[in-house]
Image: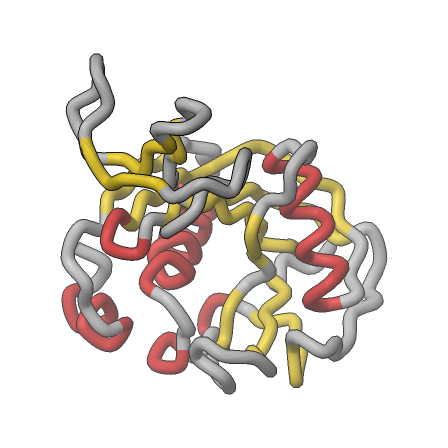
Length: 190
């Protein structure tokens, strides 16, 4: 960042008084520009027969890999509203969003994932500009070696483990080391 978005003057990268981290600071108007993690809202949409809706990505990153619907939260949305919107945008599916079941922080990409359980309101789903394929899958049909992101892998594992136990637990995970998804699969989610 070179210029202040509030007044247009140049900024300096320094630690402002009372802070501990360097920030972009405008000496002209005093604005401190904070860069904070992005929030991703998503859900695991479950059909009436227990299968979950998966989407094959039609966009980068990870073009052609599988995910459940998730994306950046918009201003003015709750995480549940964002998860429902992302599900519609990525799969044409209408969902009722249930409880938050996982928060996964990924500091190496400055993201925080908020994952919800979701119930499909009907059987309709289909391709969009973000998904080249949508499919309802049983747990044993999930292409675990073709999952787009570690957050999706762990989110699905939490979802299916809870369901197998008849539990609705809350999970928190911090992915602090960048590993390829295939390494998460080898580690069994550890």
